[in-house]
Length: 289
Image (cartoon, rainbow, N blue to C red):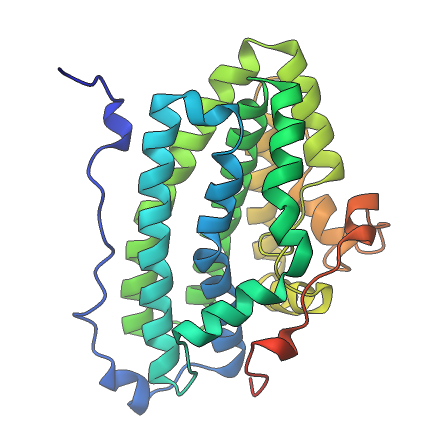
């Protein structure tokens, strides 16, 4: 029997990081703001598996191409987190299994019940939920690319740049899949377009904002986007979102504004953001940075 799987999801790859010269970080350590941003991105990468869990309890799990891709995506993101953690541990920041467990526990009941209520809502919506998830994934991937690009631009350590370039190569492929799938699904369903617009306007927040306190998200993105040229990149993401069928949204700039960042600072948080109770970093993070 031959399984006809989309070639875009072939070739699972583990990002290479063992060949980096970690001794160079002792000679030239990364700056503290860089380490904090990398620590933030480690958390994002490590929580990919939680997002995958929530996707696979929805009708999306019936799509063979989507589930094949999501398996690859989770695998590659896990190794991104391992690579980033190696850089962090080289700087004396402890990353271990006990820490990961505390991270998950700190999300509390909200995280425990997430698969239940998301499954119910998604199955009421039906197959159109996949368009929402693919669009959401595209925006997150574009945001992650921007974050890694800015980390490298603000602290251009040669060995760090090697790693970030490798991660970015995989992130570009992830974003391309998400965007292609979102475009195809939005183009064929008016209902999917309406639901996706509502989700982006009312529920989407800056990358990592669902697992970090508001002040941590604001601190990291204020550092990463501290420059007019950086905001041009934010606008590029919003234009890419706006080019998807039926959207025309300014998503990222508006969401960052609700976190007090950038030209749109001062926007009121959405209802979902006001109700969201982020975990306290004191439960699981080192605060020395």
